[in-house]
Length: 392
Image (cartoon, rainbow, N blue to C red; front, side, top):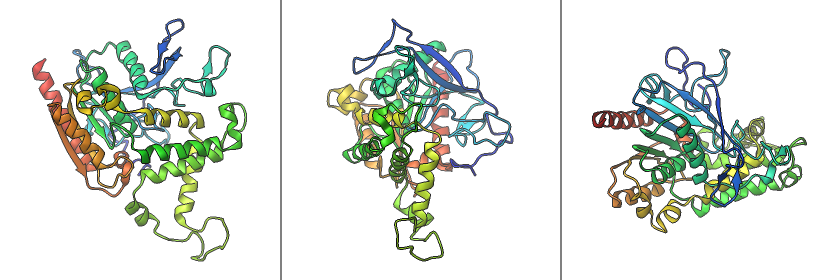
């Protein structure tokens, strides 16, 4: 069992994969961001699985969440290395069957896994961008992904699938480039973040910026703000779980000898678990990337930005078919937000299906091996593909 669910390399993995890179928007042809700022050159890290058919109509795009990356499936080495973050869903015969579909997953800008972000070198001064990196939005992320799809010569996207911030990207794609998108599966996602989720993001950002090592973001080459980033991750990780799962996993169990220490060291198992998650996170993620990506997700408001205040008008821009999936124990993006999305889609006369999956794993449920989730994704994409093939 991996951190993200069951994994078996024997016959069901996509096998060994390789990260690829595309660089574009070279000066003076920089990309103009939604803020009006310019960014270029831009590098996107990405991976592909399966084969693109002759008609180029079997493309499924998978979008990662906040701290994810382009490594959605397979493995980089023959040694016992952790597989891609959605290896339980993407692969031969799995929910997204790479025997039938050509799957693309790119790392978003602002991240620290190969795509251009605040830790990348600024060509203007040959130093890391740090906070000179421009703020960006979900729409800007999608525009960079569009450049990748154009580079690959793909005109039509069979299905877009993403959880959390990945779901925001999938929805944005559908209304921004409606002529290209056949279907969308937003999972545990939303059309706009609530005051609660924005508040949690701000608390995490303040934790990072309060670390003395943050140095206004210019810490590259020095000691990074590890304590602040670890605290931010602890706050975030709590929001990804549910009360039920935390109670089942930890309860009020004590860490040592079933006695209180009567000091401010770790007493409870849940405290130790959160410290572990924070420490593990600082080894793999950049603090500035965390700031930028959480801010991009806070800015996202599909109804306001694409429908001038109306979510129905925003969805009227697309004819894509939707499968909206939520989880009963997700309090970060609760089912009510998914239902609001579905109501607007129906008012826009879209073909939309909805399912709330009963689970106590909270927001992170989309990362965990789950038969119902796999069957929903597989059945929907197969239906869309069979109908699309007949039209073609």
